[in-house]
Image 1 (tube, rainbow, N blue to C red):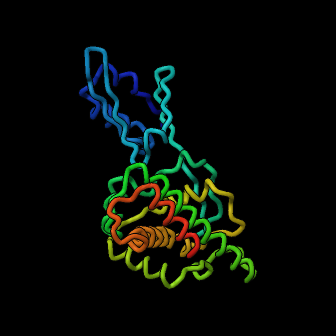
Image 2 (spheres, helix red, strand yellow):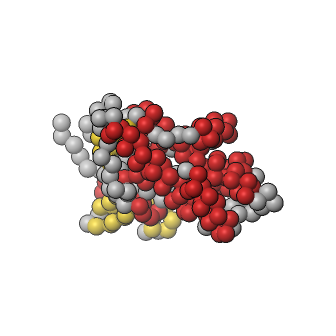
Image 3 (cartoon, rainbow, N blue to C red):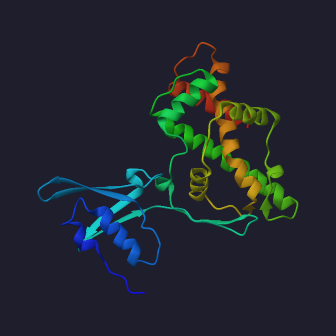
Length: 246
């Protein structure tokens, strides 16, 4: 089927985008365009293009305008699965990872879980610590799987203590949600594992992330019952104690 590029008409027909979108769809192979966008006229010869790219921050995108073409690229991670286990994670680097928890959610979570207030600058150190803890659990799980002559890490291979399991249950009661994708992106930035993750193990990662987060939030007041606002010193002491216990 012959197709026509209607892009040149958009510049002179702002306000009729819906019409040309319909024409685009009628003359295309039926695949919808991505990402969705909007064009606003801000002056006689000036326009603003708004593009919907959910899940990406400004630093995750590269934008190039060349020869009447606007190209937007996003850093992504490919996860290939055969229905049983994750087969591979692409190394996209730590700077491309989407954060597991933004500041508003981070602040709300620590107030609910530990009764303490946190600072915006604490988000990175918190995410780095919990992501490291998840990776350490998988390293031990890998060793257990290898000892049992398996190349897939099952949930029971992970060294989940009774205390961590109780923290996971506490996290579930908070009714907070943590997305899997950013955790996988963080793992992709670390040295690759020699064993794959079973689907059940992969699905459990957000719960483990939440459980470790609850335990971390509660440990601040266990160390100092009077603490209300968490600062650098409290983070360092809590991290040190947490590493001894984990």
